[in-house]
Length: 446
Image (tube, rainbow, N blue to C red):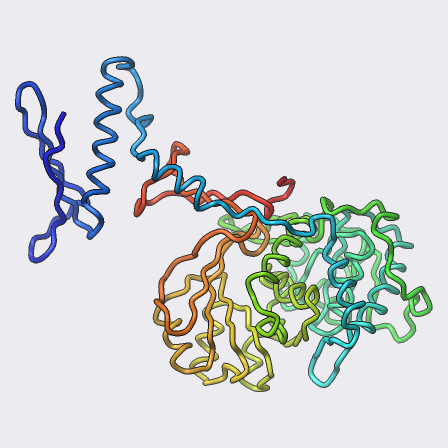
């Protein structure tokens, strides 16, 4: 068989088909002429067709019953690039450390680093001591590794104390936002079946007395907490039997069904994310991070624990739009594109912000250009992942002055991505496929 030609239909010539193939019978051979409707490399498409034709000829001679779908369209070099070269992401990270242990390291290194909420400023030293006392109380109440502990509080330092205390006690936090519909919250409680709840008045009101009836409730607003005199020392994870393969949190997402489903994430998966971030963002870029996302949304994992694991100042606000009312000296904002679009419309992106991370929604080029035009932001990063792969699995960083592209980028450290067809085979450049993600972000990954 002879592939006689390939051309791109440019200029005035148009076709409704992505590929037009003409076949000419020469008796001893067939001549093929292909026309492609997109400005892709004609040589590359020609190579795909030549590969298929050679495999087809071999199959006709040696395996005439071989299904056509098993013919490999990819040349060896492109297959290797897609499956191997793009996934060379292996990197060392502290896989033996739990999330809260990274924070404890920063407490020793920079105890005066702080959590800021409105007019309150809580040093890492005090934050750690409060979390430790509460953690010892939770341990006495019977919290064990892999056990979900619900937390339903308004956004305040007590919320961060509660998250850390659950992790330090060996449990997995189950985030419940009191702003969510009560029916949704009760549905999550029924499915996850925690025995213990950390809450405040807003949490009690959101859940209602019926949902609280079967729970041991720890009220973090009480004036005389039972844990006030407990040790301020760090609980020993090993004494608790806690390893990095135990759960750190269980977060619920409706996915495509509309029915809440719990996603279980281990310490090791999150530690990989945190360590990757420390390697790609400069200390100055992460030094003053905005924590604006609901803890029921997994972007919050990044916003809360990246700064805590790096000794940065953490600014806790109700949501990202709070910046329009109260400008803050933040260096990094991590949020969704629609929130940044609203801040741009109100000219409320702080002058101090150098990096904006965007995820959770499609990021369009015109928004990227608007941010650069209206602010002093130096980098915009687009990040992507389903909750099951631990907040972020792919990313692209677009510095000011460089090309703006609409893409989810390439895999982060210790992550692999594959674009496959319906039969599990890799698709060529420019073809549509399903995204498969593997690596450290998945539960039980090695």
